[in-house]
Image 1: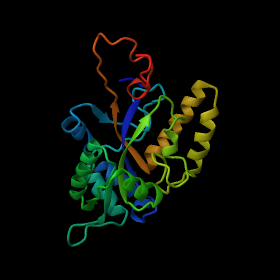
Image 2: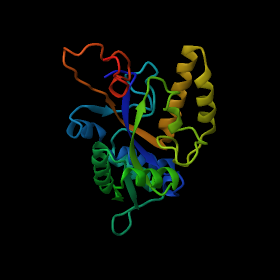
Image 3: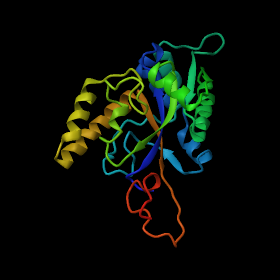
Image 4: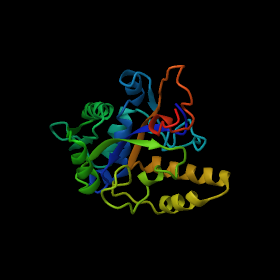
Length: 251
């Protein structure tokens, strides 16, 4: 695995929905999930709880990004505060969770569904094929919570900030289709992409990470390093950071 190519498991919230437009509700979701347990038990240690939108192995990562640690009491309190008390049936809120087609993500969706039930949130797990998922989530915006994968490609300007920047056309997968907008983040992501001073640029991306993880319209929940194994007789492999998903023409 290399810092130039890591995979995130994402949890996205449709901020157009009244309940999910409240940041306290999104944070309550995050506090209700024991991701350390999930990484150990289901991903067999091949993933770990992420600490923001850039991987912990990246030179762009800086500590001090808000971390929504597993805390059931905090989750319950936030739901109450946001005006979503438990009803007589113990339910605070009903909705759907939609996973993409990958096996790991579907497994994560079931874990989220079961975890949320403990805090009074009933999510129906709606499993669709890939075109169905893309259409519902990215074009029709007909979802409450969705789970997907996002790839970090060595630099936050390449595919990472678009998860948070507003103004992305409808239908574009792996981007901000969550109905969420933050002026400061939009301006910063445009400015950081063309900033030439490396230190200044790093600080700008840190500020973006802080906003992203404070507001969590989409949460980079788990990070996984790409692991690939080759026979010792194979020559000229792993000669670029994105080797596992790039051309192997010179191998």
